[in-house]
Image (cartoon, rainbow, N blue to C red):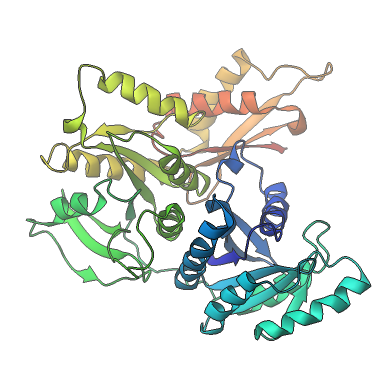
Length: 433
């Protein structure tokens, strides 16, 4: 799995512009999924073939300057805790500010790689002005311009040099991560599964160093359960810090096969839960949504059907996701939740024989061929599932560039209707024969 790189710095130094630059470059290579930028502060990037996750800490703080003083310290501490490398961005126009000095003081104590990036350097005069940043005591700095991208190559070269080599955890067991915002009932859910069970095989202490893995064996099925709520770290960082739970989820989601996304029925499918959902979807993970504390909801005004409908409205266009209503407290349907996660896991690793796929899909395509564009007719001759860890399908045709998203979605829906891929994102590619 890729390393995590955090960008820190005070407001308006150009963190987001730089972040977007790095992400966009990658989005352009990987077919950009529509709606990808719903969570503006997390993305994947790669440089010289090394992939890493990028987190822009800036977007999480709203409020006046003085609120910001406390918040930025929290964020820097978080980045120090969770990231593998840190880019500290400052701005040559305003020179060294008191806030920059505060951040530098925190960063000097760290033994993680810190890269000082002096932004908005777009001429020789500013290049000379940048010298004053030596005063921060962080050693060498990189001069960049987020706007036009100059200098970012040198910074990235140095950055990927120090990122840890990604060792794949050689573990054949499927990994289920329980994610969601604080107080949704994640720990209680895991305790309910494990608590009075004699099925536990072993406890592996914090393999990803911030989540606890429990090997779990039940219904003759063995898997690792990753509890992101496991360890309470640093009391300084308040649990409610939105950024915190997202940061924690990033690692867990990237390392798992199926995300069990828990939400509190009384709070609903709010922005943060949606962010975690998009994160899982964008990483092509299996997803199961658990609505916990359903026993606390007024059934007069809320029916399971309406509630499910409301959630699925938010998930569009990826609505083929199981939604289960549970109560951890009353132990309602918690085993059903695990069985569903197991089914989703199996769907994610399912392989459709090419012949069977063509027998079913080609007649459907013949009945509803792609609409013609500018008098050009697209003929799809053949399709196959690609040999990837999650379901991706390639459709071979004469004019792949003329096939638009709605038709790809039509193909995806047809695949879903004929083969069970519930809970799993599917990617459809058009290829030239």
